[in-house]
Image 1 (spheres, one colour):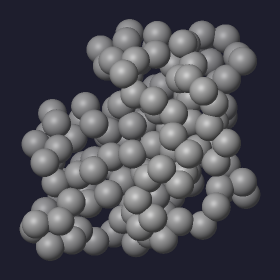
Image 2 (image 1 turned 60 degrees about the vertical axis):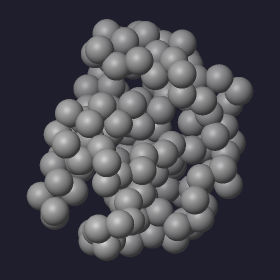
Image 3 (image 1 turned 135 degrees about the horizontal axis):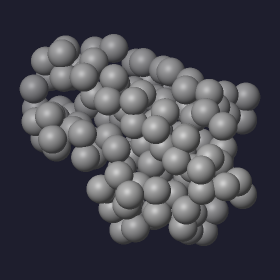
Image 4 (image 1 turned 90 degrees about the vertical axis):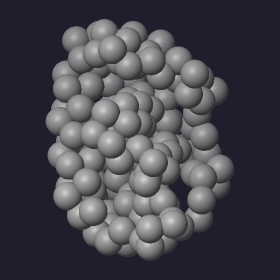
Length: 144
């Protein structure tokens, strides 16, 4: 993973299929943590899906609100709606269904999709996303 020149922002994209749960939660955590750790001004953070749903899952909004993060103003996006080159691409577990995106760094987090499952499953997935996102933001911050 490499950062760009000082005047360019490091782009991060969280990609899943529907862009209504996992990738939206990751985007919310990343924006919150980037601002909290002082790297928000050097990052551009996106989420997108290969087949996005029309709205963010209300349970994703609810469990993120419980964590103190409001994602209700985010919106679902098609992968073509984000920049064509992303420095850091994170997939949520759709590695076979995700298209190739030009990138410098890639991880697949292999997270279960909570869509259609219990609120407890949403909370479990949220916890995993929070930890992985914290680790990612720390890794990027330490590269400065």
